[in-house]
Length: 356
Image 1 (cartoon, rainbow, N blue to C red):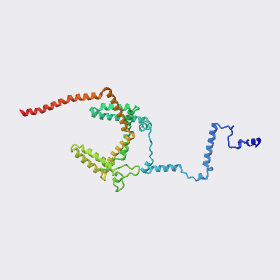
Image 2 (image 1 turned 60 degrees about the horizontal axis):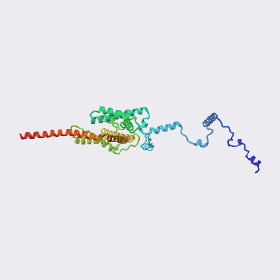
Image 3 (image 1 turned 180 degrees about the vertical axis):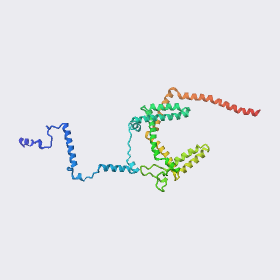
Image 4 (image 1 turned 90 degrees about the vertical axis):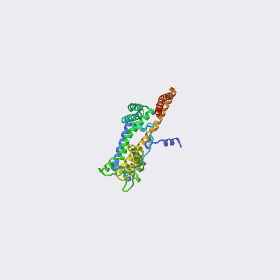
C-alpha cells in the first residue's frame, strides 16, 4: 500500500469509537459524585415502576422483610435440639492477647471484679494457712490478700496467676446461678411437705426410668443417674461419719445407704435427692471447666517452680537449710532429754515403793 492509503486508513474519528482519546477531559470529583447520585435515583425510580425488570428478575422469588423476621422469631421460639447446637459450635483459638483474662479485663468493671476477686481468694488462702500454722488467720489473710492484689499488676507469671485466681472466683459466682437454675431443690421440698405439686426430676415421660433418661432438647437438664447416686453416697457417708453418737465407720455406712435409697425413690424425696446429687456434680464440672479455661494448675506450677528456684539460690548464698537443720537439732536435744528423764523418774518411783 501507498503512503496516502496508509494515512487514510489510520485517520479514525475518535468520536466513532469506544476508546477514550488522549486529550479527553475527565470529570472532577464533584461532578462524578453528582453523576453517581443521579444514576442511583434513576435506578430507584425504575425499580419502583418495574419497567426495567427482565423476565428472569420477575420470576425470581423473594421473601418479604416482615415475613423473614417473623419466621426467624418463630424458629428462635421453638425448642431447639442439642444436635443443632453442637453442629453450630466452632472452636476459636485464643491468642496471647485474646485469652479469657484479657478479654474479661478489657472493661473497667471487669478489672475491678478481677482485682477484688484476687483479694478475696488471697484472704481465704491466708486465713487457711494462718489457722493451720500459727493459729492467727487475720494477719496471714491480710498479708496474702495484699500480696495477690499488688502482684496482679505485674506482667509476669505471678501477675498471671493472681489475675487467673481472681477471674476464677468471679466466674464461679456467675456460673453457679445456672447450676442452681438447672437443678432446683425448693419445688421438691414444697412437694415433700404437701405445699405444691410434684415436679418429677429428671423430666421423663410417664413410666420411663431415670436410668434411661437422655436430654433431647436445649432446655432439658443434664442428668446421669450414676453420677447422682455416687455423689449422694459420698455425701451420706461424710454426714453419717461425723455423727458424734455413732462410730465413724458405722455412721458412714448408714448415711451412705440412707442417701442412696433416697436417690432411687420415685417420689418427691427421690426427686430432691437426684437434684441435689446433680447439683454437686454440676459444681464439680463447673470447677473443672474453669480450671481448663484459665489453666490455674499450670500457672501455679510455674510460679511454684520460680519460688523454689529463688529459695535454692538463697540457700546457696546464705546456707538457710543448714541453719534450719541446726536449729531443729538444737531444739530436739533440749526437749527430748528432759522428757526421757521425767519418764525414767516415773518408772523408778513404783519400783522404790515395791521394795519398801
